[in-house]
Image 1 (cartoon, rainbow, N blue to C red):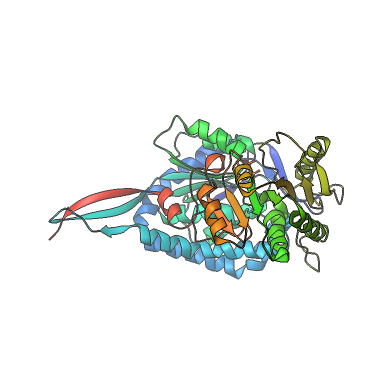
Image 2: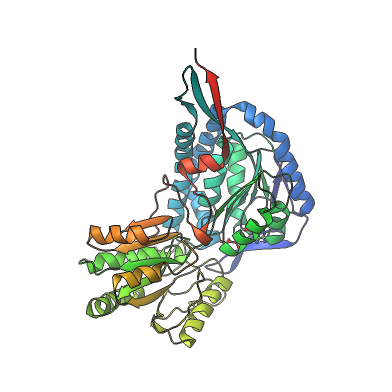
Length: 475
Ligand code: ADP
């Protein structure tokens, strides 16, 4: 296990408060250390600043070579890395393996996107050619969440580094072991000292980094509550780039498709994968009133009751692992309790499965009788069912949120999908496919309270650098 702080190629113990991660499926201590204090955060930013000029000078191809070496090393340790993710997050090993695969794939995607974005352009001016190049911002801070502790920060770090930025990385305080392992691999891959620095810790460390006057950009993935705080902080810095990836209250409409089993399957994948801890997970399921809707809900109820929940390494492998902590499970159950008190009906009631752990069973709650439900993201395996009268009402309810990350429709009619697509407000819109199935090569993100940028592909190349437009005399 690594120490919590890495500055200029050297590992340190933190000088702040003690914090730790647990294996949430067992409650056992997994990692412990001290948080980076303000002085260490400043030292990390200074190291990144010092390393910046040389890193830019090294050139794109050399930077890409190091990124490829990182991917190779990660590939060689795939099982160990996936085991670390599964232990620290509680997600099943099969899913942790997929996460590592996505991290490796990100290198090629980012290199290709950057290549497509930069280069010569033709010009409408006679005797001149327009040239578009990209320059890095300088020092950027990357803030990571716990649900994909490898894949999501990696999705910012890879494009940021190959674009020529240097980075100070502040992972989630719930997944320090995964973060340390990732940074260790970058050093092993030959990343020059100071190009990537690590400051671990909770909110205080995050505040110190976000407020540091010498960062040029901040790329954040996490909750909307924190993202909104960062947005306010950055309001006074119009020259700095702030890329926010936040939550959602994602709607899924089931418009009487003929294949009920397929719709049930995709609904389960949408709402309960990663124990409902993907920002794209379906939170609200819109089901028509009447006999078709009753039948669909019967089939869905049975399928939810049949979901296997268990430890990350159980054999046979469960579909759902633990949520990130006992406190997180209690938070989901408290939200369920509130809904039930206000008149909601439990089609399947979520329950704690083992004291001292984050193991809980999935919940399916019919909230149709509840008036004025809060527009809050319940980040866990709880799906709210809303019965609707006609399709326009379904779309209106779907859009009745300040978020706008993912939205989906199950329908056999392409016309209905087009109608839905024209009216729905979201950054990811899926048809007859699980909401959580976004391609890694596609721009990823939402509108409204869900974010202001798109991670991945050419969009990442854009926010990781600024374009320089030039006009040159043509020979
Ligand atoms: P999640 O629950 O998805 O991990 P959070 O928003 O709680 O999302 O955390 C995302 C990241 O932001 C974490 O690294 C966390 O420590 C950090 N963070 C939390 N609060 C603040 C804050 N007020 N200022 C800066 N960083 C913060």
